[in-house]
Image 1 (cartoon, protein in one colour):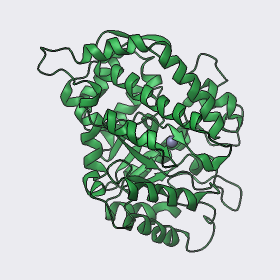
Image 2 (cartoon, helix red, strand yellow; image 1 turned 135 degrees about the horizontal axis):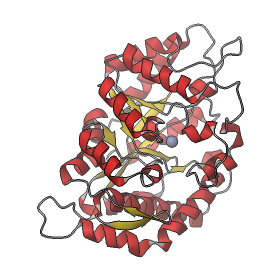
Image 3 (cartoon, protein in one colour; image 1 turned 45 degrees about the vertical axis):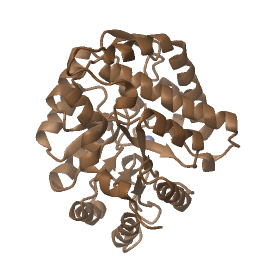
Image 4 (cartoon, helix red, strand yellow; image 1 turned 90 degrees about the vertical axis):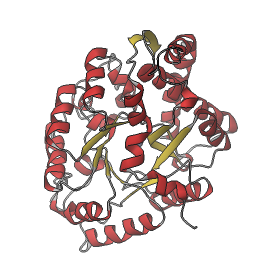
Length: 376
Ligand SMILES: [Zn+2]
């Protein structure tokens, strides 16, 4: 897993480096003097990456976050991971060491889902993570595509077993960070031109084309939507554009219908750049309070392999390149290079950028409380 991410990451890093001049150009445009609403240079914008997975204390990462004015909300995932407890311990330790840089999102185990008292045990576990400072709770695609009832059918995310958990999160004011379903590409034939081609080539288990035993994309999305409907006080943050990366109108429809629904862009900026920039811009301008920044870049040394200093530094460099490329796209003007493509930067107004990059996350995840830290 680590090394699969790595190869992709190194490739992305190289692509980004190859077009560094283009990125700098757009970033410089963002900082052009004279315009009162001009975006600051990247260091002048507090950037909260609400979808990071950093499971080692990496001094170069910490240094980079401070230098570029970034924060990483460290997301524990997934509920079947054999390192479930260890990842929470690492996230908590990192948070204790640097509360201002690495707040964390906890998750809940799925192994015992068919045992009596499951929801009560999950609530007890999550409450412990909240006492330790967790700012939200992650639910992953293995709800819908992994966990099964004793009769072999898949649990959908709106299964009644989760209702007491969702009610509890709403009551204690913790958002549900929901990566449910997959990009639509998972259900379609492999397409070398798709931004998801590498992932599904390397992870065939998640490529669901011609696997009718799995629920469809529409079935899982409808179940996810019913969570918002059934639990109007629960804040649901749809990871990866709410798995609607192919459908800006569908995103807008949900944002209109469910005031408790929010989205983040982790690992989907590469989808946005392929869409008409005026349409993407329109979405950001229409829903400035509902969209947040994220990357989904991960470092999980416990998943295998022997990370070296070189690999660690390459990972940190890749994250910084991603921050810079993304900032050039969202804040810059004119054409630029992104992932080897010539794209139109969005040139979002400063007030929208501030919400996207930090104000919405600060409000929904109550990050200022988290930054104040909890006693170990
Ligand atoms: Zn993720």
